[in-house]
Image (cartoon, rainbow, N blue to C red; front, side, top):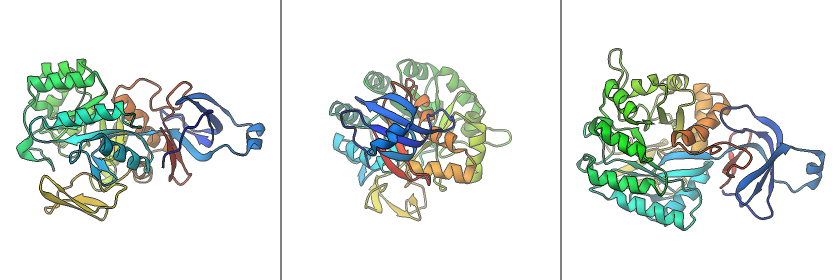
Length: 381
């Protein structure tokens, strides 16, 4: 659910306040919100207790930021790229604790992605809450690593695409997933200088090609380990190059289907402060449907897994709070760090200005309220 922000400014009492950045919790804090921003953070007092009507929560943490969500609430962005779809997706994502989404438009024919840019532009102009920007995952991918993407729509990036993406990045944050081995270094640099955040994904690149792309402006990787070259003893591949880097970020789908828990545990240890959580959710998340068509292929939900008839994974059916619980439970990640993987680290990956992904004086009131059992009580946007 979404907790409204009425005037005058409300007070929230948090038994534990996690300020962000992986820092430990502060006990028994009052947070005051005014005009969409945090105006005060202070220890609770006996006078606050006498008020009796202050909303309380076990845990208050920075609002979750999901940089990869394809659909939710029975709506799929590729099927219907409209402000109405985006509003429904954002509402459904809040049930899992997400305050801000980067709706993801995957590979489609030609320049269909322009419809996604226009939808995000119009939705932001209409004031749809929780809409950070846009993630374009394709069509500039490797035909050798299509995953569930339609291979016939995968194509090279050209000068007109660069011009379109550059204009879009002036309006709102853009995350672009490409196969970097298919994009010249000067083009990667031009995109990065224009403000586009470029990630590697669906890539057959070598580790040397990733190193070169990083020098040209590559900032991270999309769904680490999935649809990319893997780490072996003599060929680190995309996955190994990203983990070995000191600067590259990576999103990961912590649902138990996309990445083995042991592999994920290795990545968590190798990439502290750089690995973050994404859902890669499809329309089934917080919805009623259990199957849908994707490029003519029937996708079914079973056992928490979305797949086609050949068993190929097709996005995910998981929310952000489940991903947080999973890395705490299966990967031994301390709770402050797990919460940062869902908020501060993705904000930093997108180069959002501080204090995004934190609870700080003067910062935006994007907040997630949880129980001690890590269930969602509400989201402030």
